[in-house]
Length: 139
Image (cartoon, rainbow, N blue to C red; front, side, top):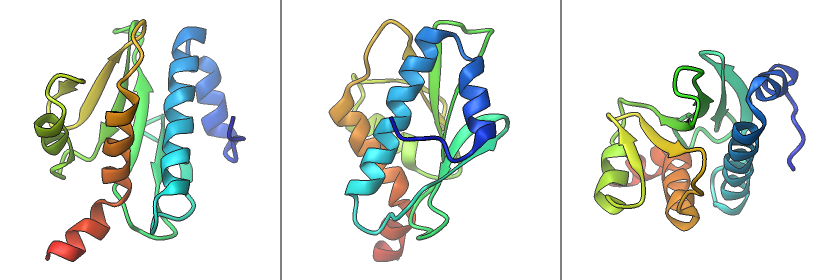
């Protein structure tokens, strides 16, 4: 597991129910893995945004923020959030209409008992982490 560099993020992870903490931990590892394997992304900064773990490409500025979370009001679900002012979730919906549950233009919703479609999710994460790189190429 990638060590936490931010104690506040680690503290938030420790508040999640064990089964959700494990699922979010897998998403966290996937985000770091994709970042390290994707050219132009660089090191990620892990911070809290709206009290939830968020991953930013502050070094390279290559991507859009990815945030993850869990809500006590929806205890068997966890979420991967993307900036709703981007076209990311719309693109994910076009590419993977049957792989994920989407919430508006901002989130992929996961059910606690199911494992996500990892290959599709890797591509979604890569697209988010390189969002600004891709935009500058097409602009």
